[in-house]
Image (cartoon, rainbow, N blue to C red; front, top):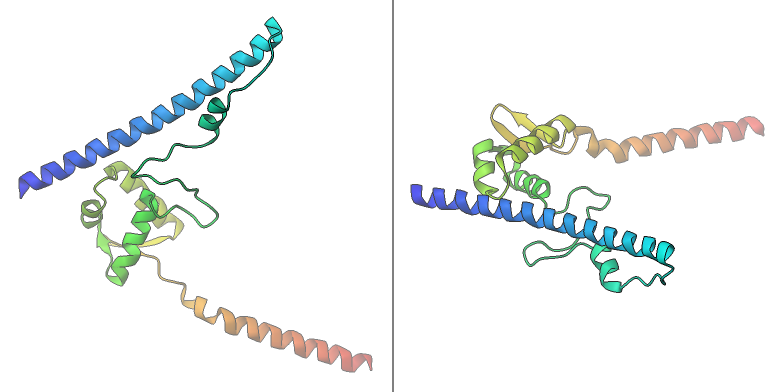
Amino acid sequence: MANDDTLTKALASVRHQRSTLETEFERAGAELAKLRRAERALASIVEGTPLDEPAADLSASRRAQASEDRPRGSRGPRGPRANSAKGRLKALLEEAGSEGLTHTEISERLTDVAANTLNTYLSVMANSGELERDGDKYRAEAPAADGSNDASDDEDALAEDDREDSEKAEAAE
């Protein structure tokens, strides 16, 4: 059993290192493409050569490479992607329900997330109200208790506005 845990940790470490290197490789590739374009632009000015940008450089610098285990996508207006570490953490805590999970349980289930990253996400999410911490348990923040009353509050406000409007109309007559 201890051997399985060691192998799991080794796998998580290798995945993390691969991900870090891939990110660095993509960043370096984008920088190289920018330098090539700058070189061509300067050569065009200095040497009077025509400025023809190959499509290969443009496409590499303007879009991220997708790999089999990391699909393309954007963050969007609604928060982290479902396949991001933070998104998976949030989904995991929502799945756990009101019982919540301990830090150890979370780290066992998200083996590819580095411990310091997990700690940071938990801290930031707890401070922002995205999750609730109770002792050593973390749980997704439940919908606000007054959230169910929003519709009735809106109806009350509309009814009061209607009354005021009708009173003003009667006064004007």
